[in-house]
Image (tube, rainbow, N blue to C red; front, side, top):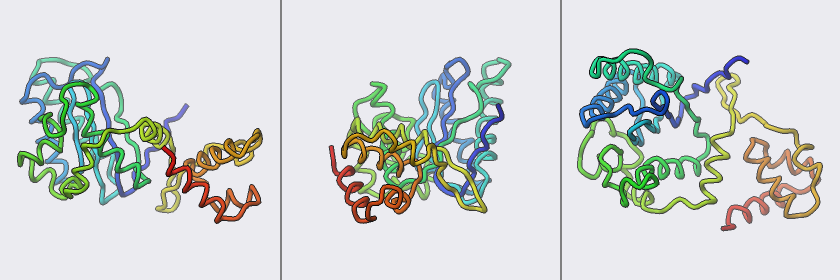
Length: 253
């Protein structure tokens, strides 16, 4: 089966890569520093923003914002340069990475806010620290202690109010939303990025047996890229009714 083309659209992308066989890709402090040096060189060469990063022992997370459709060039530069360094440093041969990097196009503003917290709280989730700003190899700590200033120039985390949100734990509901959004697929059509519709509207509503189930299906259809107007027309409801249902679901805990 052919690989699905990457979405290279200008905008926000969450990049993840892991060591082959989940092996460690950082063995000493100099390795982390070298990766960040390579990341900064790539930023200067390809002109993009680094909003957040977290380097864990066997994988990394980056949240970048591209200004051109060059995401693959950016990731290849980072991964190949670091693999060359690592193999030379530790006198090894063969691939360093588990496979080609993963990237998630961040099309939703609320997704972006959850994602920032998810990335920066990764060391807390892994029980490597209890507080934001205490794990050295993250953007939040770098900003607090004044490191990697050029790399994080333009980062959204320079906004004090947004930075303060990192202290808030991620709820189960938010984790579910993050999982759903990361599974969402996108296509590019004439310079426009659109969510792929995963199912027909019939498939969402053909087994509807209650208003609660209907409302849940409405939310799922919206998350998969259907417009509220399309759903309203299909269900023969007003757009106002669909909007109220979505607002009610958003406010539920």
